[in-house]
Length: 487
Image (cartoon, rainbow, N blue to C red; front, side, top):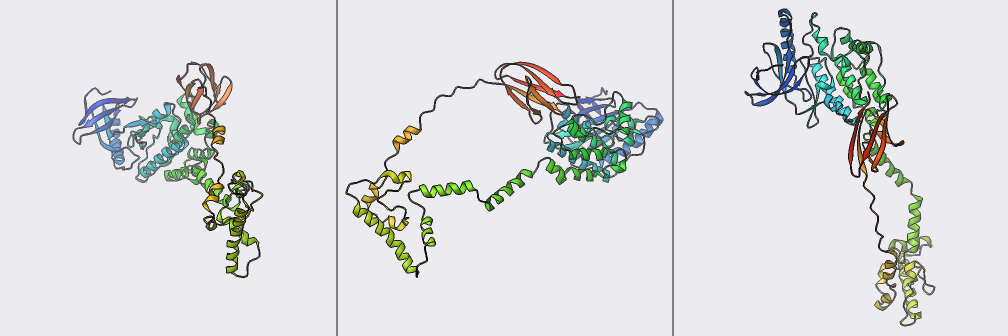
């Protein structure tokens, strides 16, 4: 680890991380007055090996420095100190995908696709410009605070690859390396596609596709074994990802996606969108109203008929239905005369026969027709204005205030339910949740439980792994978080 306060022209602010190959610093560039990240690479090489390293280091760093893509961390400068080489690059406010996965956060499937697509787009751009990364892994994928994806360490993965040091193999992460890298064969952009397939697999399942107790076991599986399909480890992973991951992780480069653009296009295909249930609900909602407009609802028609029968004053459109059922008059003049004369005659006869001071029966308000008045004949709106005011006021129904008071009693007070305790869940890749032997759901999507205060036995089950047991004793309104990653 460097002890000086300066690396080249850069002023060290803080140590951000340290690994086997070197240290990552947060530093300030006094010339341009900006914050940068500096990654150092330890040089414990002979003079001959160092000369070979320097040649390859500067060549690859210059190639990576020409890359200008929104999903690639920009390289600002390269240089050497007495015992280390360094690369100054764009400083990203955020965290690596490795930190995200290790935190226990379960990424939504849509977000998983977004991350993989952005990485694939960046790789396609780099490959088209003659740069191969060769060390794609979650630790080299940064997620910024505004959720952008940035690939780091372009220009480092190929340094050095001499026959004596074999540092090119060491720098690659074994669990994400392509078979041709493991075998020491020539590699191209399709090795990055294999590594991205391994990262996608881990985001879907919470586990890398090739695992073992030691490096030899991992490399043997990469060369000879097929990984378990993601849907077998994670019930929420759609089966379409089984096919996509299998093609990306094909042993032979010619059997994989031939370009990262092809990989990206597959992740944005209609089949994937449908599997993620993105856009389907809107299509279903569009089809339902159209079908309803062509096929009338019998229940709705029945309600309409009841309304026409019960209302004492039918709408004017109902009055126009009567002439249609009768034979048409000889002329429009006769028809209009009949429409006006009949209601007037009915009203005049009703007023003449009605005893003075007698109020109308309130039967009309309940939908019943008085026997003394032929109310079945609809009355046009124009003729209602011709009725004397005394008759109109006498025909008004009684005030319904007592009825309203009878049907609207004051509600009885409701007893307040006791407060529950809350359990938050972060399960990777997934698990069936049982509380005191009763199944509560599958997490994810279940992320929150409300249970009664007291002692409980909570089990997280996944058929592939051993059951995780948690015994809790919770008070009312107490909150508890259970985070577990099956391994």
